[in-house]
Each structure stands twice: as C-alpha cells, then as structure tokens.
Length: 117
Image (cartoon, rainbow, N blue to C red; front, side, top):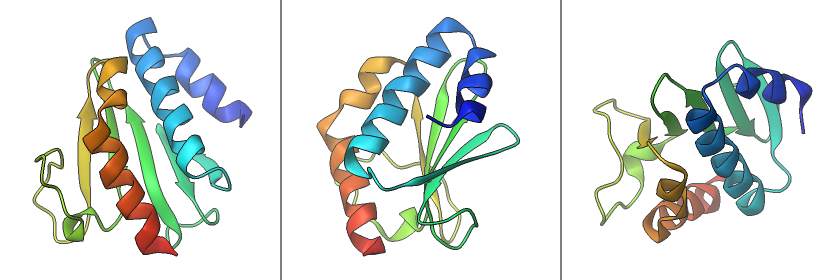
C-alpha cells in the first residue's frame, strides 16, 4: 500500500481509520489496478495520478469517511445512498466499518467502475 495512505490513516481516530481501511479494501477488491494517490487529506483511486481518470476518493473526517464517486450524479441509486447536489459528483458517508459492507454500496461502486471502462 502507498506509504502516504498509511501515514494519513494513522493520524485518524481508531474508528475512522478502521472504516477507511475497510473502504480501501473494498475499493482495491473491486478495482485492483487502481493507481492510489494522496492529495492533502484525500486518497484518490483512478487510472492515473491526475483528476481525469479518478473514480473514487476517500476523505477521512473526524467522525466518518466520505467516499466520493466521480460522475456519481449519473449513477443509478435505487437505495438512495448517494448524497450531494452537484452536477457531476456524489458521495456516501461511511460512519462505521459495517457501512462499507452494504450490498447497495458495492453495486453503485461497481456501476461507477463499469462506466469507466
């Protein structure tokens, strides 16, 4: 794993770090070829190091982790997980590690990846 990711998550509370690591695991399970970058307090997963190929962004906060989905505004979301009102991106707030295990989250992430191909 990218040492910058380890450093960033080591600075978080144990609960936030556990949730973030669970999310990292899911992202890399679904997107094993992702290029992982750290920019400030965000962890990006994409086809390259720039914004253009970005698919997912993890942002640890004080009490939760935000999982951003590039082009999430166009994704089907029958479970209503996606939040945000922007024209392009959406996000999901992950409050506990078990939030990462939701089948609806896996489905919307899979759709985001399918649209990148």
